[in-house]
Length: 206
Image 1 (spheres, one colour):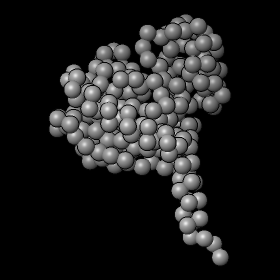
Image 2: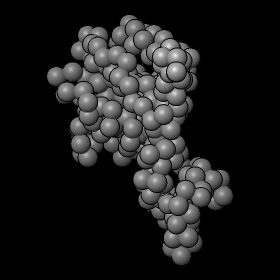
Image 3: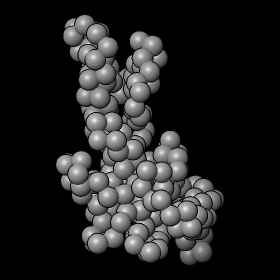
Image 4: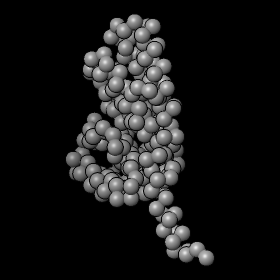
């Protein structure tokens, strides 16, 4: 006969690795709302193929801007779209250093998970983008309500990515930034103890 406590312990152990998106908090500070989610590392893997195809389109634009022949660009795109090469492998190969932020395939997978998670929060901007919008002066790891850049309304953070300061370019109030960063930092420590990654979003409330 199986020990029920043993079964519960096993399930808790497995939950560290199985595909999970768990909302861990939601709140408001001043005119800003925030929400945080813990995800298991394999949750992003569900989106890897899609992210690789997205990365291939990003690489297409960059290589053509730098004069790489179309035939060669198509070959590289196929390798990126098949997840054989990452974005930074390509940039290193051609010695290209864009003057705007270009996300890795892992960051693009986190972007898709963040978008899915935010759809569970009524009124939240649901379109997360790891890419910078240089033509509009909008930073990397931004939140939008749709495809139009004018719908920008927040920033997001992924504990394993290069998202940096979530307030940068968005929240000018230092006291609010400190409170938000303190919440994010404590949640990140908790997520790491549980073998998970943290996704954190903050946006301006209506």
